[in-house]
Every structure is written in C-alpha cells, then in structure tokens.
Image (cartoon, rainbow, N blue to C red; front, top):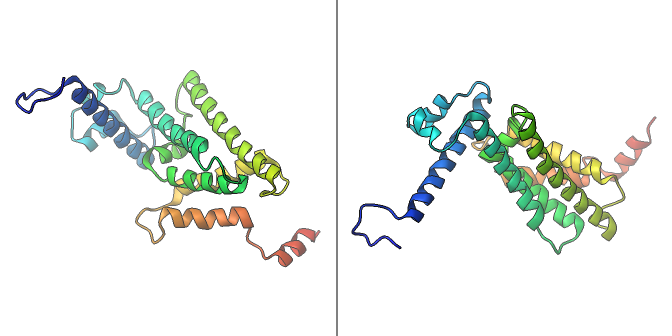
Length: 215
C-alpha cells in the first residue's frame, strides 16, 4: 500500500523510515555529546536538549545511555569493517593498505568514528565489551592479512604484519583527537600526508642508513 496524497496518515513503511531517521539523529547527537563532554558527563537530558525534544522522547528510540554508546561504537566499527572488506580487492597489498588507511582516517573524523576512538567500549558492561572487541579483532586481522598479501606480492618489504597494523591504526586513530574540521587542511590531505610518512618514513635514505647504524 502506498500513500495516495489524500490521507494525512503515513504508510507503515514511511513510519518505519521516519523512526529510523529519528533514531539515527538521537545516536548522532549523543555521539557528538560524548565526543565533546565525555560519556560519564553526558546525560540523556543533554541529548534531548541538543535535539530540542523531551527526555521521554529519547526513550522511544533507545532504552539507555549504555545502549546509545554500544550503537555508536558498533556503527563506527561496522564502517571500518565494511571498508576492510571492500576496498580495492584486486590491487596490490600496498595499494589496498593505503586505500584502507585513507578510509580509516575519514571514518575516525566522523561522529561515530570519533566516538569509537574517543570513548570506545570501556564504559560498557563486560559482555557488551566482548561483542565489540570481537569485531575489533576481526578488523585488525583483516588489516594484517592485507599486509601479508603485500609481503607476498613484493609491494611491502618483509615485516611483522601485526606490528604494522597496530602502528597504522594507532597513528591514524590519533587524528580523531586533534583534527579540526574548520582548520586549513581537509581530511584527505591529512590522511595523505600521514600515510606518506607511514609508507616512506621521514628520513632521506642515506641519512636513515647512518642514523640506524649509530650505536
């Protein structure tokens, strides 16, 4: 059944779509509040005020502040998971890793990605943390497999894939803490410059050789 334009009542599909849009608005407002104020200092009253609605309205879309944080972190992780599954499946390991790192940088500067980095799952109950950490582990192993592919195809020199995955995630995650959307550099420029450092280092080859050889 579709709306004819004569009835003031929405169809079931339209009502469900509206509810999902409003629920996402609640989650996004909460993510921004958590990012700015911290999880423990943010109340559902704060979230309601940001949306210009009453606190009972918030409970129509979520059951608790813990559920909100779980959903915010889950969405951030699922964005990373989707990127790790779909970026350049046919490229070299290095090309895929650079593409993954670029997507990673973009995601951690968005509302849910920043919440994943700045707040994370630590404030949540043990079982909930386990669910989210299992997804984190899956994403980490997928990044490592891309490094392993690069070693195998010769585009990445022999190294410890676990260490490289941790180093890349650590460096790029930190962008969430200092990046300012109103600053002079856009996210892609920041990502490109930081990834260039991760891929090529900071020293000219002769200087690097001498420095690494020093006692």
